[in-house]
Length: 103
Image 1 (cartoon, one colour):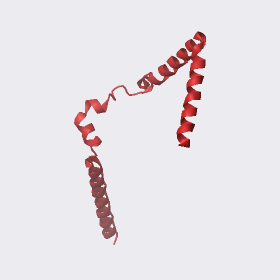
Image 2 (tube, rainbow, N blue to C red; image 1 turned 45 degrees about the vertical axis):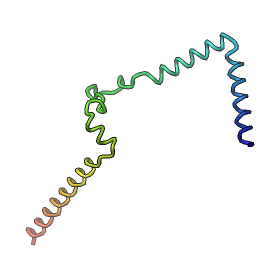
Image 3 (cartoon, one colour; image 1 turned 90 degrees about the vertical axis):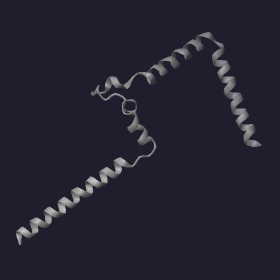
């Protein structure tokens, strides 16, 4: 009950403040300009700063791969684990061969 009253009071104060600020046309225009500048800053494409232009949008270019990743595919993780396991086996074999050659 008390929280509802507090939220209502905060909403009423916020609404009154907005109405007061927007009452004056000059303030309203200033607020519109600030909002427009803020929106322009957020919506400017960041790709202008990127050195790689060929990156594209992989979510559109490789739809099936994106879909697998989105669905939680573990293929990439399994593939990486298998490669690292094979590399570890190769290293162990070469270490054993080196140890037997030294003996």
